[in-house]
Image 1 (cartoon, helix red, strand yellow):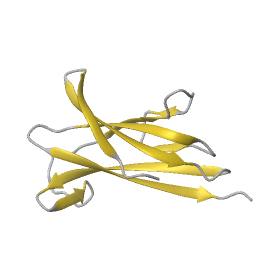
Image 2 (cartoon, one colour; image 1 turned 90 degrees about the horizontal axis):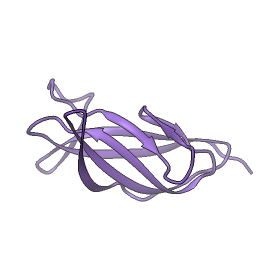
Image 3 (cartoon, one colour; image 1 turned 120 degrees about the vertical axis):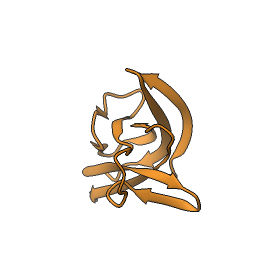
Length: 109
């Protein structure tokens, strides 16, 4: 899986949304893609669980363009899908965001 790359900002329902993309390769069986929002800070990033701040980013959706794979959540069962994945997340005012992706699940022979 490639590292997520920031693509652009979007405006939806008066909220600023950041669009990230990554290339993934499902393992077959039950491969689960998990997206974790991060606050970008000077020199790195911190997960929302570690941040003591009410202005936190949140995952809006994950989808695989050109397929019916999509979820309005932070996880998506991608099975053996390969290709581009899009992740949208909210951007709190006066904050910078980043994204961590993890692929877990059972592999098939």
